[in-house]
Image (cartoon, rainbow, N blue to C red):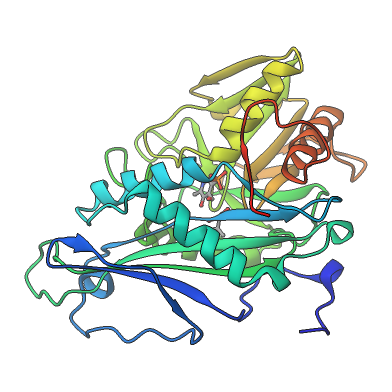
Length: 339
Ligand code: PLP
Ligand code: COI
């Protein structure tokens, strides 16, 4: 444990001391349980394994200069997991159980919250899985909710430096009236081949187009998209993208900074008009986009020529991080102080 190099963490799994679990059986949620093993015993016919009854969340805890640990917008993650459960006919996890389980998991693993100076954070992964056996395609009546945590660094290797993305029409991550707007494993399974091809070609992620017309920007594999021009923050409105809590927060911060915010369809060609572009999410924070290559048409959209993030992306990034680490007042009540 003492050998963790906090400033050099990547976004990868690390076993920590404890995880928190809660079972849904006989129509009700049980008590929170604390486990130290990171193994789960599950029925081979569990609906979570066969029929995708599975949803997860991602949020972070940050250690401030004052030594206090802060959680960012936990209620929003609780709400989104509730929606994911409803969308896949799982027993929704009540907000109070979600919040208490997360608080407990953070508290029990507080020695893994990276120090302020490292710029790293504790990633929290709540997970809801259908555990009851069912072989016909139908929802089960037994569920397991788990929360585990680990210290992480940047999701995209570059950190807060421009990274390149690729557009390809070969794959969709979500259907127009499918499950793209909830956080279920199937969306990520559908994005794996596209993501693999992107990595093989030297890109950090795929920027997906809308799956119906392939005319509009949807989102990246693990993050929402935004573009900036004329003092305006533009981000796609689409039924098949995940409503990102980071993006929602950046819209507010952009507005606070006197910018106009537009949430609307973003035609692919509009990429050429943006002064800056970025991917945003809990894991990605803000990842400025250097360029986007449309590999089928051979068009390149370039946003950073000097390897540096744009001025507005940097301002938004600094503001968001300052609130998360407690360096600036939490004027929107986004932060829960843990201790
Ligand atoms: N879009 C997808 C597909 C994601 O997996 C994530 C990550 O959670 C996001 C967007 C960003 O959402 P948030 O900012 O709530 O983490
Ligand atoms: C997150 O940002 O929390 C995500 O879930 C993105 C990815 C790791 C799936």
